[in-house]
Amino acid sequence: MGWLAKRRLRTGPTAALPAKPDRAELLRVVRLADPDAREDGGDIVAADVRVYAPVEAEPELVGGELEKLWACRVAAEGPLPFDYFDRYLAEGLAFRLGGLAVCRGEVTDPSDDGQGGGPAVVLPARPAAEELLELLEGEVEQEEEFVFNAGGIRVLVVPEKGQPPAAKELLPFASELTAIELRGDDQAKLGALALSLAESLNGLAVDRWRFRVDSAEDLLPPA
Image (cartoon, rainbow, N blue to C red; front, side, top):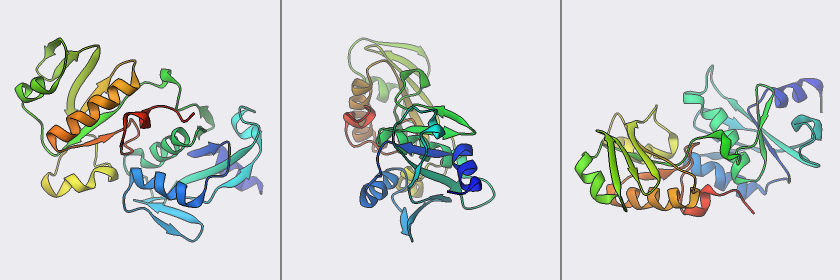
């Protein structure tokens, strides 16, 4: 691998993986972030971002944290990626495939609880506070108009930043999206609530990187 290619991997965003991902599996995971993602030669194109085919890389890329390493570089096709989608895509891929993320020379572990964030439910319209209260379980405390505590889970209703590709099916019905952000220590519990709210409110459950969530286990690092 040439020095320029190595520098690009170090600059990132790059998903550094412990094993070479199966091509079909890689496409499946990318489509959780963009249902319209497609193969283009050996690469995958999602929204305005290209996920380059995995290449074998030196462990020094991640400071020796992985003994063997396959790197998927993610790069915007245009001048600037839309809403940091390139970085989120690299981090989400690393999380789903048990690896690490490299961005601007910094190595992070997406499965580290200290990274913050949690799942969310993306909706085409903001629900009434009364409607949301009826859907929350356990003892519910309302701190502000759209901030709640329910059974140890913090629930915040906020405008969704941008238009994540995973939620494009909601966009015909709304020009601006709303997100119910969930925060807490038990990711499986957060995931179960996200899926329940998504079903009740006709929304989409997503993880912190805006990958679609199909089960609560999607929020847990792979075994």
